[in-house]
Each structure stands twice: as structure tokens, then as C-alpha cells.
Length: 104
Image 1 (cartoon, rainbow, N blue to C red):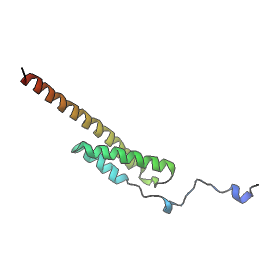
Image 2 (image 1 turned 60 degrees about the vertical axis):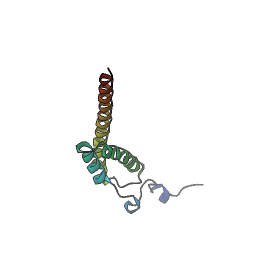
Image 3 (image 1 turned 90 degrees about the vertical axis):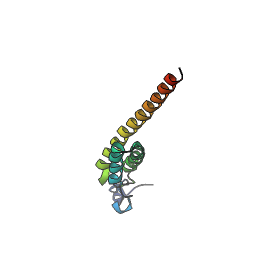
Image 4 (image 1 turned 180 degrees about the horizontal axis):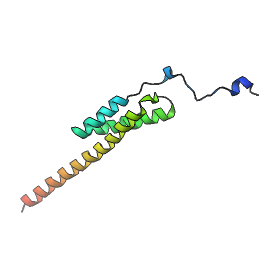
């Protein structure tokens, strides 16, 4: 089957912006900030949502106008998740040390 010259000018990857999912950049950014400031679980949520949203933007299914806010929230989420894991590890280590010294 041959293509006409009109078909060659069409970009198949272009989609109408109205068909894209709205970005959640501000939500991811705020979750990342609150994850750093208060609760590490919010940072983990920002990390997961931000990663999913960035993949959706790369695939062309989500509005890319909020990409920078999503990326910053995603990075804050990573830092918050690492700090949460370290906090839990130090708390468990503290409990183990107290238990070990209290038993003697």
C-alpha cells in the first residue's frame, strides 16, 4: 500500500493537549516538601507519584507543563525516603543497644 503526500506530513506522535491527563506537579512538589519537613511517608508518596507522572509525561499521556515541579518533588521524595529509612534504622539500632545493655 502506498502513502500519499498528505499522509507523509502527519506526525503520528502529536496529540491534542486536551486529550492529555492534567499534571500533578504542585501536589508532588508539596508532598516532597512536607516529606522533608514533617513525615517521611509523604516523601515516599511524592517519590512514587513523581516517578509515575514523569513516565506518563515521557510517554506523551500527561501534560508536560508541570514537569519541573514534578521533578523537584520527585527529588525531594527521594531524599525524604532515604532520610526516613535512615531514621528507622537508627531507631532500631538504638532499641537494640538499649536492650543489649539493659539485659546485662
